[in-house]
Amino acid sequence: MMTRNSLYKLVVKITLFIGSLLIFPQLAFAQVSPDAYMFKAMPGNSGEVNLMWMKQANTDNYDLVFGEAGQPLTFGAQDIGNVDSYVVRFLQPGKAYDFVLRPKMSGQTLTMTDRVKAMAGTKGAVKPVAKVAVAAPAPVPAVSSGPVGKYSLSAKQGDNRGEVKLSWSRDTSVDTFDVVYGTSPDKFTFGAQDISDMSGFTVKALTPGVTYYFMLLPQKSGAPLDWTDQVKAASR
Image (tube, rainbow, N blue to C red; front, top):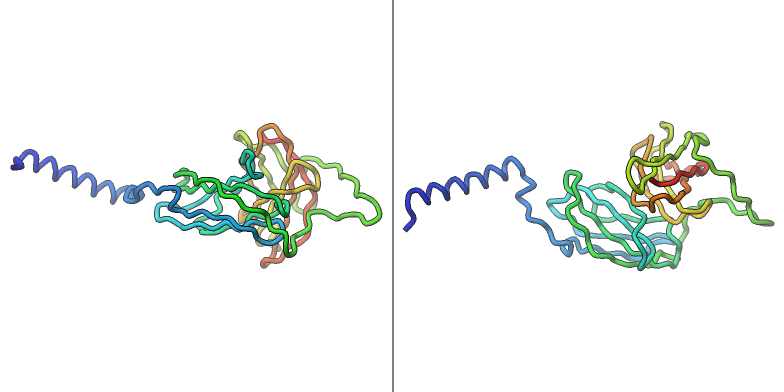
């Protein structure tokens, strides 16, 4: 038979537990298994992979990391929002890539899914990243860290390991920006789309110490405008 003292202790424990859920509602959700997100990848349009997953109640944001299949995942897209799908663009058509989803809550990474693999699409139109000469190869342009062009785009080493910070001037005629980047001029195989911060972006999950080249694609009402000039910077 339960004594008065043990009953009192039980009531206190229950009260404290209920109180913790009211004060910290995120504790009401049990840790979700990575399998619960049902993370999937499939080919999209040319140079694109479509990613899909099941949203969970204890998740309010996501990061993505990706790279060539079987290789280190050295590229990524951060804070893509509380969404259930994402299109990775500017990949090499026909090449296989691995992807990992990192669910987050209040800025903290909750877990990481297993890798999923898909081949970048080979059909449909893809946005050009550079003009190509018809009669002769185009010379590789001289690239600086900026600022360059209409938007005064510049790049510099980031604050943390594997980061580069991009900055540019605001323009009321632009709604969002896409960023493309890679390790060679005019060869941009990775990107981040629909950047809502109109004056800067930090590219993360880069290979430390490697020089990367970056371009911006401004967009207005979903329609792409002209590409910016290139800038470069070495990741920290």
